[in-house]
Length: 626
Image (cartoon, rainbow, N blue to C red):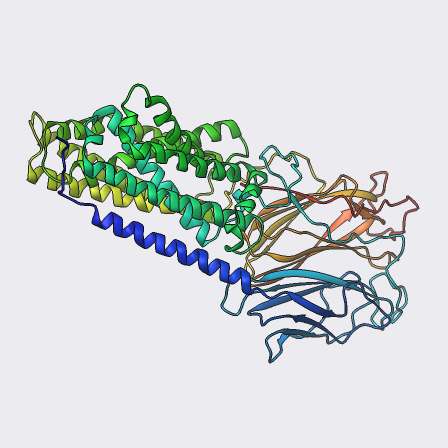
């Protein structure tokens, strides 16, 4: 006769699954609506590519539908300050028109305009850019030798066009030809929720299977246990599906609704190992349904190997969220060990609290509690050791100075509390169950409350682990070991922009440019770097838009950036976030083609060495930060 324990019928868990499914459906429907109503660009004035005899008095951007909060950024190549002197952006009464009045005429040369919009309800909007050329202007350019003169950009100093950044798929720094962001560099609310629900469910399923195999082979005979595992699998599938949908939308800079298209999920294969792991996790979670349908497969010798291998591999994908940086192989092994040990610890605790200790029972329940006490010791030790390895590798001594480190400290505090509660619960279990022939109601009730408290703290820890993925670790993983002659940090607290610009060899001729964005993790737009030559050099400025929208690394070809004169240059960075716009400058020195520095006493003169213009067909390559 099959046991039918009914101490805790699992109504609360079924209610939770139904509620989460409703939230998931609302998110998907909402994301679809957002994607369907997104406004598209209708026209611009001046038009993209226009050549103007005189500078415009305003820039107008027209959309085919009303837009919400919007940001417009302009960068003029020959302006000494990069951005022209403009008034705040004005939105028309119809909500479809953005107008930027220009106070002072911009100098002759190329002007780039970048715009970002949100939908009226605050949902994801769109972004874009266009450019136009001013042929004549009363405002002098930095290269003008006569005040008030107006000349176009020097033909000997070609200006690079906007180049689309190409994300690198793997942590080895090789270009895989994709045009998506690395999955380790994107994070939003939907991605966090899906990741947490998926991790939570997989940990419970794997920990439950390990406990059943090692200490409670009678478990699959209980209807309560079977229903519990199936409910958890439904939660796991919903969370993993949401995770894949949200992640595929994020790496493509698209709305959540567009991520519902299964064809976009294949883009995750080009989004680094975290993206590939997400696709593999979804496949393995679906396959785990075969095990959950008949849990006795994990103890049947004929099916035990595949029944345990499938959920094990699914948990392994959790450990592939950080795959680059120093000691990368050790980091991957530590991440996998941490995920497996955490699942054994947390999953076993949840099964005890929700099923084994749901009510009084016979000796097999006592053996289950005792068996978990034995296996959990090794699981706890492995969790702590592997966590310390990752802490050293990713954060080092920056635990309190960086957001990633501070969240990690908070997570560590909760892990310590969970460990204390867990050791106390095991001590109580040993005292109550020592030589006990069965599980009495008072003992079951007391142990259930103790292990239940431990499980709730574990849930908080998993939530904090998901939050950590939205921050870049202080010890940023990178495979680029090039020594750059110029390295200038740019940090702007109001806008939240934190980046580093590197240049090599900093000599006249072609140079390699590398830009590392540390923050923000996303929602960065209009990132442009202007290189302004020395005063009175007779040369035009060089501007390089960088198509990074968040934390990441952009690296050009070795001779991509042309610097045509030796002396003291000015490097200006312009970038926009939802909290503001950063416009910051730094100076750096460019040596002659032979490597000689031009001292301040020597007037810089243009070099006769030819300058190679960067190819507009060679994209800047971007690599992940985490």
